Length: 455
Image 1 (cartoon, rainbow, N blue to C red):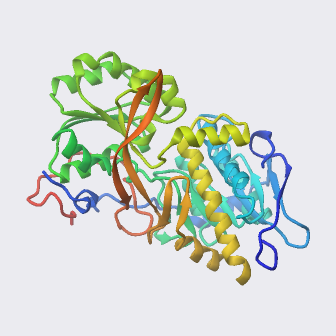
Image 2 (cartoon, rainbow, N blue to C red; image 1 turned 180 degrees about the vertical axis):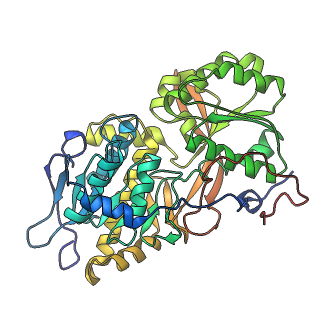
Image 3 (cartoon, rainbow, N blue to C red; image 1 turned 30 degrees about the horizontal axis):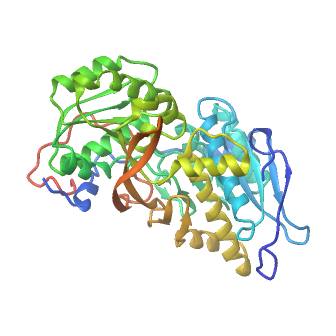
């Protein structure tokens, strides 16, 4: 923004991400009630972390600049996104969404200086990346890494720093030790919001007996646990719960258990290649299963999983926050010339850009200090890629969700919204305490009031 508060034009300078130029009836309240016992944050010595970070050598692996005129300094935004490895495609999709916002909104944005530092897959490289961005570049906004361990290290590392952090891992707690972080936010769905809203709808629409499966990793287990907890409190029953290792497992044998258990439907929390394999196996056994399949948005992630699974995903129903992923991906292709793999990640990046530009624009007239920026983000009402986005007091996103069915249309899968669920909220368990540190050992105990909060 210029001193007058009017938007000014921007230009792309330098290399960006990947070396490319950057240009029973159950109420919602019943379903939300979750057990407090077992929910805790991971303790970690921040002094030890920062000591290691400060001592680490600075290593900038790449960066791009969206520059403004010399008389008015730009606002620095840092990204810690992997350019290689299993999350590289998701990272590239998020960055593409960020770029799309800047491309589409040239008259409604602050001018940003963007730096991406690949955090690598080792603790020391995560510390080096964080040190580079926060201490050397002095970024005002930081988009954190996606892997769980790296995300947690960054959350602890920025506690008390002069930076607003956007956490991109859905299971990481937004808390450092026992300290709430006033400047940390999550824009993508956490693992609760990704699955829990399906529970009340499934009980009403599909039946009372659920067979649950998913990837036996942190996110898969949390999503399945949150669905299970809500479904149980609505009056549902579990036929079985069998998780499959992300490194491989006998999907067919697992689905045979669903047939033997006489479940009304199957809930599955998989993503990417594991989701594709599961959808294909499910389709091959559909005549014996004869059961609906539901899951989080990632179960039929567009475009990658949806295209590769093809008609095997026909009829699958998933939660949805991005109403038209096909159109959104098409805009990225048309305006940026990029083919992305994860539309939901791109939507997250789009909304992060919108939040940053709004916060800087609103705060420019009063000085862009951290307290003012944080207050603006906390109270924002953003018309973003997924509709209206706001934050709850724990800085988790509030977004409207719907139930989507994937239907074949002239040889192509088409997402069709079959029911709107309205705005979805995370339970208020204290700042950052969404998710289980580890999967519960057993099912919830029977109680007379299945809709209440455990003591």
